Length: 105
Length: 510
Image 1 (tube, each protein chain N blue to C red):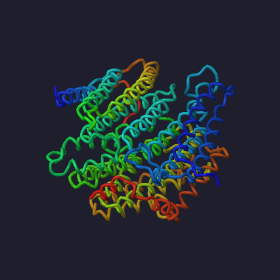
Image 2 (image 1 turned 60 degrees about the vertical axis):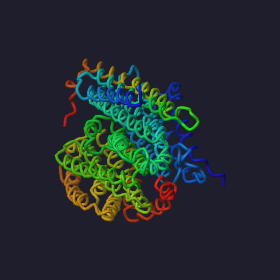
Image 3 (image 1 turned 180 degrees about the horizontal axis):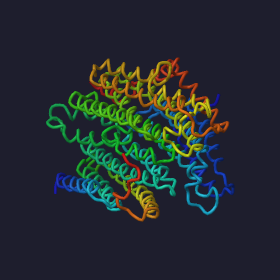
Image 4 (image 1 turned 90 degrees about the vertical axis):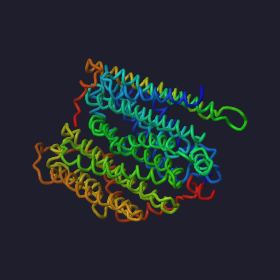
């Protein structure tokens, strides 16, 4: 297992997440795909941290700290995001993007 | 004279105020929660005054720090504080509309957070102004964005507000994903998250035998992802798809906050993030080229799409994309030398200060008028000059300034932007800029003609609260004053040293 394997896996996760955001039509699924994109970044950060060894022989812990911040922020985002989606569902009885088009270009 | 404050005290006070308001609100028995807004205006005003008496960050080694408090950062902190104060004035004015669209068992329930969250957002904007490490940039950016998700979707009984909230949520989270992935790649290649450290290690990596000597593609990939994400925040085309819907659907004070606060903070982060890269001959021109393309697209899209709009909020949304274009012209005209960096920063800062005054003025007038006419289409402004000459005059000044008429702050901002573009020989951008300014005259003057030459459908005079009247008056005076005496702000900005920037660091390494 080299750094490239991890980066490939994380790139794949990011691409799947991005494709999901563009193609899927259910807001909950879109939201899950967004979380996938954040986790792709987490995976590659940890990989970079393990392979960027500092002169002392330790992994570069900057990245791992950043991962914890990303996890925390993602949790906050999910808490707020799901609340907004639930409120929308109560008002409209739908979570389908095509039904959400009162505001139009 | 007390000893100067450490600059981070300002953020600590604002953050404590936000938490205090949230706590105090749950114990408050009064039905009218607007006291929270009044209290926060007073405290933020004190912090604003205090910001002129801070010690700055002389002697701090920024390559080991997260937080920089140079003059530019302090200037953007003041912009954030001023914006929040005026947004709170608007929020008081908006209280009646807000109460109608919130499901609640008794009057006033559930409106408190509407006055507390802008204060927390302000703290996030202030941290963004000072962030010199990707970690702090990311966390403060998210503090701002997540508070905005809640505020945009605040009116839960109005489906447009919810819809705007969901759209902002999805596209905001998408841009977060891009930002994080971009940071990951920049970290992976340089091993650093601090912008000054990145500036220090990059020249060695690009030199003969360095890690990035043969191919800069991975680094460019990271930079482009970060730029895409910041493009979302500053509402630049082609990442502008969320702007019109979110601006139209959100509560008016929040629209104003989004268009000024979020844009200003996005620009200071953009200025800081590109600094380690513009001095490098292998990467700098490519980054600048990408920014110039974004600038041209935003100018054209924003100004042309604003012309057929009938809803004033939606029109201002497109015009805000256009203004992001002018600001990007100034950023894209940053040359690799220290003096051009200084000039571009001054142009961006001055433009944003003027933009703050005129945009907040137009939204403030709109809030009052929309309260009375129950709508924010341009036809609701018909004959406003007969109903309230004062409000009509305020709107007139803000529209003239947005269009860029001489003797207003908007004109001098555009002048500085074009001067920077001429110096860097961006003649295509200047051409686009001149055409779009002309387009701007058309749609801004449409509002003026509705106010002064159309007959009102409703003759009742519009009543204005004293606090709102005072704020509108102050904003009008500010726009005219800085249009005639721009030197007052410029002197403050020119005193901002560019010595303590990543570019200066690289120059000294050579």
